[in-house]
Image (tube, rainbow, N blue to C red; front, side, top):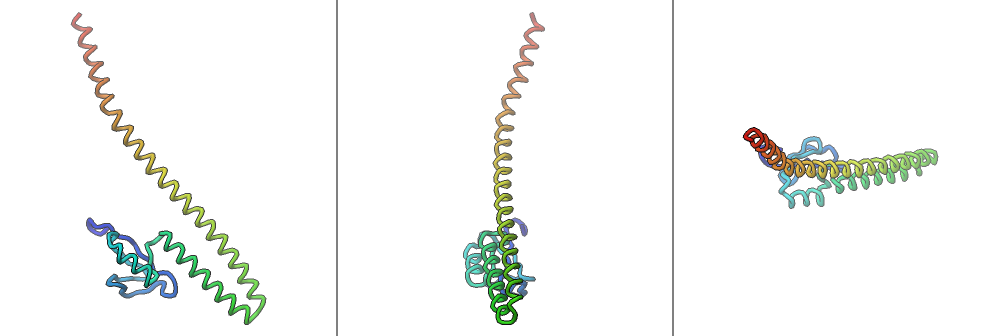
Length: 153
């Protein structure tokens, strides 16, 4: 957060990865810029026209996946023309990248589920704590009243 404003870290993906300069009035340093979260139109345009997406968003992950795939495909074409052994090595590398991306996606999904469960647990705990507080005060008051009543008899 910058001040009281919520910001989203936006990352450039693709051939301009690491870009330093200005896009749509936002300063990118090393391919990263801070964009106000409420600027939904700017976030949309950065993604659509400049391949810059909120970090760790599904759009960002998909753009990275497509860019990696495009690089591998270009490498395969170049290697296939130069040396068939390189084409086989690139195919092995592509398979490894695909398995790593699948594992990364699985872990990201697991993290999203854990965050959601943690938030739900915290919400339930807060609700339980709020519900207990008045009941505990009532029990304490009842015990105190009973104690006074016995002393008077």
